[in-house]
Image (cartoon, rainbow, N blue to C red; front, top):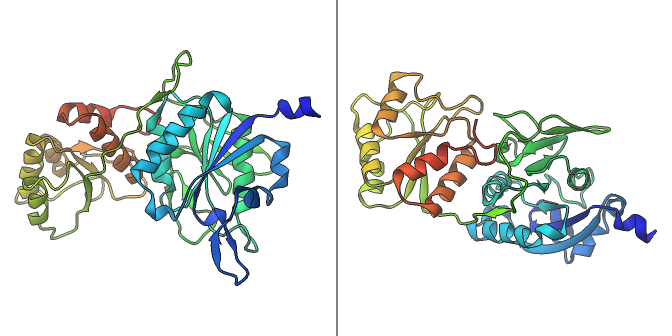
Length: 340
């Protein structure tokens, strides 16, 4: 029996909070579980697929997620990398895709499963999706076929930096708008896509876990006044800007005020990343004249990155350098399958 147990993959469970780890108290109020064992006891069948160690990394609503927690998670995985075959992270759904994107960039050369999951309903509620999501996350981690950061949610296995939350109420809460699924969960688990980015299996994990969060995200709209954008750049309120344009990423050019400000931002070393507001379809700045002028002024296209990934990647780039050309190269390079 002991030899059989030793052959099971070793998986480290890292808990960060969220609905998935909440239980009801005697009054029926949802609260964080009092212990790891209280959660693991809910899923005794997991002992059949993996040897599980668990650690409460933090216990927060994911709206309170921070770059410091991202850094801590990445460092924990690096520290424990040689001791485990895979990792499962439970996480609140609201910022899960941001964390998945951050870890995919922070853990360079990753060649083991790092699976993030959550739930729409707490463990103790009738019809909860928690058991399904947690059990399948451990199955995917233990099988070792998805050797990257991924999101396992409902019936989908999604590349982490391609995931996005699409629905606040439905169990089918996440999707991959710009990239094929890595796999699908039914009676069996089917895997579809292998990694499409370079890994050097002869080298150890390459940790780059710093993120610079002094950026701002702006949504353009008809009649948008450039006054606030001007202040951001003149007063250096932010070191980077995410700008959601129209359609494929177009911006207003009729009076060229925004174009002038983009050029000024570049002069000051402030990258302006333009992203399409559309759920599907890439950012194509060279499709129309309005987008082409933005490129000429110094805008950087997010291409087919999700908003979550473009935001996180800009923060990651700024933590490494403040030189505009270097930031552009980082943003346009494919590190972990996050950009096509």
